Length: 280
Image 1 (cartoon, helix red, strand yellow):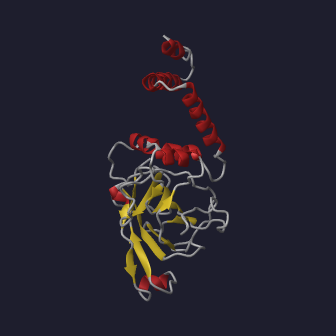
Image 2 (cartoon, helix red, strand yellow):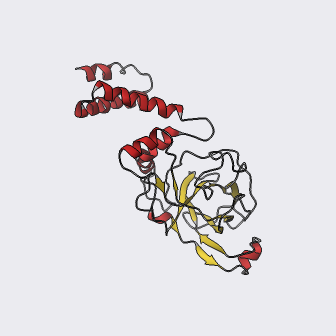
Image 3 (cartoon, helix red, strand yellow):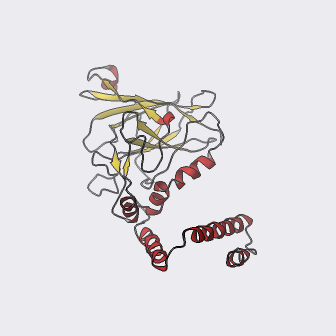
């Protein structure tokens, strides 16, 4: 049988994990082909789709294969498998295709927004599972501008706009000044967009902030904070929403103590959230 011939061809793979992956891939891929019986034209369409997906990737901003994985639910499935054991730590979610390394180091409460939007202060603590503060944890944060695009993706935005690396203080506290995140469509100008259009799916993600939080001795946390009032929470195009990651953006007065502390001259919103890290 052809399938077993191909499986056997990987039998001498030195790395046992690679051998298992390749043999399982062949079995499942062949099973898919037998079940669906694609025409040769459909098979070539699939090859072109994957080719075009690769062409839409670059080393800095755009990663169409991550986007494809996200929209097929594979990213969240991998996330669930790798974080299947309940520990009390903050839940994880998808990394997303628009992270950028080397973004500006920000001071406590510094404003990372250089484009217009409704002012927001996001603050809280980074804690151990036992509730102890974690000092000098790094919170790498990124979000879209009001036009629904990330800096780097949108070349008109200043470098580092709505991105930054914050650190917790001696009591584990962090504070970020930014703008209210907005719902936005994932990029639809590539193969993933064509797939969504052909299958009648919308491309929208609910408003969120991305976080990657690191501290020595702890597992790196990759997660989002979602606006609990967003209309796309139940139909996120990448299936990334978890109820524990929703926050309320409360209206605050222009002249209160927090506004003075972070030099906000008008009304603003505030969201609070405590992150909990698992031991590495």
